[in-house]
Structures are given as C-alpha cells and as structure tokens.
Image 1 (cartoon, helix red, strand yellow):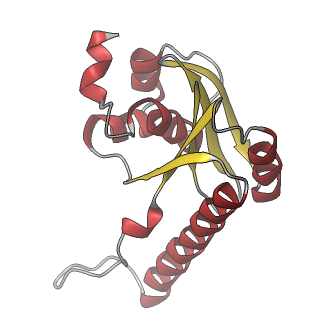
Image 2 (tube, one colour; image 1 turned 90 degrees about the vertical axis):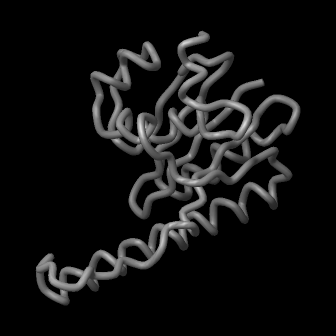
Length: 158
C-alpha cells in the first residue's frame, strides 16, 4: 500500500508518495490539482493518506514582555494560520467525499520536524536526493513517520 502525506498550505500543498518506507515522489500542488490527484488515487485498498491536522495548532499569542513586532504583523500571522486551517478542512472533506483511506495526525515535532527544515538531514533520514522544499519534506515525514504505528525512532530499524 502506498502512503501519501499531505502538508496543507494556501498556495501549494506539499504531497509525498511513499511505499515500504521509501519516498517515491514529492509534489507541490495547488488545491484544485490536489483534488484531482486525490480523485485519481482514492482507492482505499491501494492508498492511505496521512494529512497533517492543522486544527491542533493554536492561535498565535504574544508572550508578555516580548516585542515580536507590530500588531499588524501578528494579525497577518494569525490570518495565514486561519487560511491554512481552512485548506486543511477542505482537504479532509475532499478525502472523505472520495471515500479515501486517511488519517489525520498532529504536526510533527522534534527530530521529524528538523527534517522539514534541514534538506541535508532529510536526505540522510529518507535517502531522497531529488528536489524538495519544506512543505514536500514535511509531507514525506508525515507519510513515513506521522502515524501512530511508526515514529522516527523506527528509522534505525530500516
């Protein structure tokens, strides 16, 4: 069974196709292109989706005594978070409508999150030498290690 990780985003969503612990393909897809992709790959016997549940990320609050910029900057961050949450909801709804096999997982933390930001580390963990960006790397890490059955610590066993 192929596992497909999705990192929701407003402009382009990160998508990773994996099988047997190996990254096969990384894609950055606009929402409507992602809908078409899901429609083509919705057979629950062949594909399992791992969707980042962005709903668990809370609102951005300023810590007292810290100057992190203007109110306008904070409002923009909150607005962007809200937009990503909306896209995540739409993707979950589309997966449901297509009868796809999917699991929503919490955003990755720790070592798995490091692989999102560090392309060299991502390469070491996954063996992927192709083109990638933070969103596609995050999608790959979700597909490979996001489910409860597998965690990044299991990578050493591969």
